[in-house]
Structure formats: C-alpha cells, structure tokens
Length: 505
Image (tube, rainbow, N blue to C red; front, top):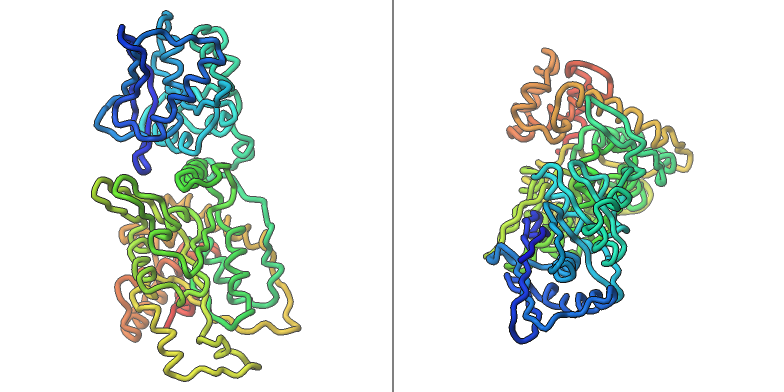
C-alpha cells in the first residue's frame, strides 16, 4: 500500500486527506472510496486516459483508492494528480514523504489548475509550517507568494512522475521568485504593504463637492461607513467608486486573503493592489449578499467578498427590508455566520459600507431648479425604509448639493491618497491592530485621547441628541481619524466639531 497527501475544502477551511492505494488479486476494477463526491468519482475516466498517455497498462487487479478520513465529505477534481501518481508508481520504490499533490488531469496527461487549489493551500499554510506542494505549473507563480510553503510546478503527469522518481530534477521545478506584485513593497511599522499607484478613476473628475471629498478622505483613512444623500447626478456614485483608489495599502496577507475569497466565490484569483469593491444590485437576494447554499456547503456572499474593501449599496432604500436589517450584524461584529444543518462557516466582514440615496422618491427634494413632486407622506415612507439601528451604524453622513457650472476640481486622487497614507501610517505606528473605524471599545479608550474642550463638546452633544453608547463611540472614532489627517496627537475641539458635522440627524 502507498499513500500521499492531498486536501479538501470544507466551507472556508482546508482539511488534510491521506490518499491510499491498494492492488489486490481479484476481478479487474477501479474504485474510489471515502465519501468521494461526484466530481471525484468522475475522475476515474480522466485518470485512465492520462495514464495511457505515459504508456501505463492497467494490471488485471482490483485497484482501490481510499480517501482518509472516511467520514469527511470530499469534492474537487484536484485529487486527480495524486490518485494517478499512486497508481503509476504503485510497484516502484518511491516514497511520497510529506508532499501535497494537487491538479486536475487532462485526457492527454496535462496537469490543470482549479479554483479550489489556492484557498486550500492558503488555509493549510496558515496552520502548518514548511509545507511542500506539487501544483500545476500555470499556478506556480501565485502559489509561490504564499508564505511558509515550497511550491513545485509540473505541466504533465509525465513530469510529475519524473519529479518523484528523479530527486535531482526537483530544484528546477521549484518556484524561485515570488509574484511580481510583491516585489514593489513598502514597510510600515514592521509590516509589508503594497501601495496602489493605479488611479483609473480620479476625484479630479468631480467638480466642486469639497465637503463630500473630505468625507471620502476621512472614510478611507479610518475605514468608516459612509452615506451620501443628494439629487440625481450630483456625484454620489462617482465619489464612492473613486473611494477605492485612495484607500490605504493592503498588507501581503490581506492580498492573499482577498484572492482566496475570490476563489471561494468562483472568481478570478489574480492578485490585486486594489481593495475589493462589491456593488450588488438592489434586487439581489439575501443569500447572494450574505451567503448561503445547501446543508452540505455554505457559499460565500457579497459581504464576505467585500472584506478589507468596500461594500456599495446604490439606491440604498430600494434594497429589501430583509437585506437591510440583516446587514446590522456584519457591520457591528465584523463577521457573518452561515449556519446549516451539516455546516457552519464564519467569514470576516470588515469593510467600508458605502451607501447612496436620493432625498425623496423623485429625487428633487434638494434641487434648486427642479420641483419635488413627492408628498410629505411619500418622503416619510421612503426614509422609513432605513431603520434607526441601521443608521446608527453609519459613521459619516453627507448631504450633497447640486454641482454648479462654475465649480472647479480642487484635488486629485493622488493628493488625497498621500494624506490618507500619512494618517494610515500614524495609526499603525501608534500600535493599532485595526484602523480607527473598526476599533473595539478597549482600543477607543486607549487611542481616542481628547483634550478638555473636545470632551466637553462630546458630553454636551450626547445630552442634547440622546446619543447611544454606539453613537458616542462612532463620534470618537471619526474625530480620531480627523485628528490623524491633521497630524494631531490628541483629539481637539475642531476635530470633535467636524465629527459632529458628519453625524446623521
């Protein structure tokens, strides 16, 4: 009996699987056992064809492949390579040691990548050190960037067989360099970050709206939730779409996590300097936004795919009540738990929640030119779609005016990013694990230090507006970010007053 290692993905966690093989004297057959789902059972014909490409003749014996542990459901075509290697090398004196083998086989013996390989290896690397993996050569570059692993690439089953039978050829198949994205990095507070230099959408395109641009800069620097309200065409969506390009740089581990999430969602796993930007339509279903699926697997949703980035709800009040109220927990807790009978999976959801809405159903309530056709009842009903508890989770509210023909552009995205980067460095050098907008109560007490004037203004505002504990905490967080953008060590009077000016009333 021979064995090698592979792994399977259970929700967002990878589990090691021992692939075992035996050849016994009996009627010729080929079976795979161990709770192997349909995607694995179908691999038998692919494996037979691929083994034929290396002139392997199936013996007149019963071949049994066991995937252990047998009580763990397993799926994915990435088991093909390991199973084929065990059959091809069954009678040779080869030990697979602690190598993990991943790859789907083509009928001609080629080794192909699958969307599940990257999140599996990333999950394994987070729990095991000095991992050694054999992967398709086409995915070698992206695998080499994962810390704590040695990755080897093969293009065909013939190369994979040579890899294990000829130890001397292994060095030439090992990944020598990391992904080019990680070669241009910067150090901030002892950690490696990848700075974005892509300004495909620029705030220079937006004329006027100085107050809104300042709000975007504050939201970006501290990862604060933001709501823009204004007439159609005033620049709400334009501002939020450009927010992505001024956000703080991503740490290497965050880039890897984003790629793994995309892979879980069946999307492109290419690395990107840009943070995620998710903008589901207001007709999207609740499972598509928060995740769902059958009892045998919970699928990732938009809120988890937006982790480390932006979740944008355009036409905010038009989302279903069920979706809007379900949004409260991910915004507050920074995670979403999907529970099914046979599976429970938790995804991180720390992102900027950005929303845009009109002031009334017709959109002309704030207009100086167009008359509003809505009754008071229509306006109240429209605004009532957003509950007070959900609005309490919004850090920054901006009422945008209509742009004038004489308005000019006063700031570019690059200039805004430079200010955001300075504030970001300040937070990290201060020892914060999370940016200001995501700090917990203990971090607020430690880092949101106010002078006497700011403290007095906050107490007066809390008494006058009847602020909740959450509302007070959000005022402190926003004031802390404003102070960081000003380069101030403590929160002063002007910082607290500006924070109050961004509060929704």
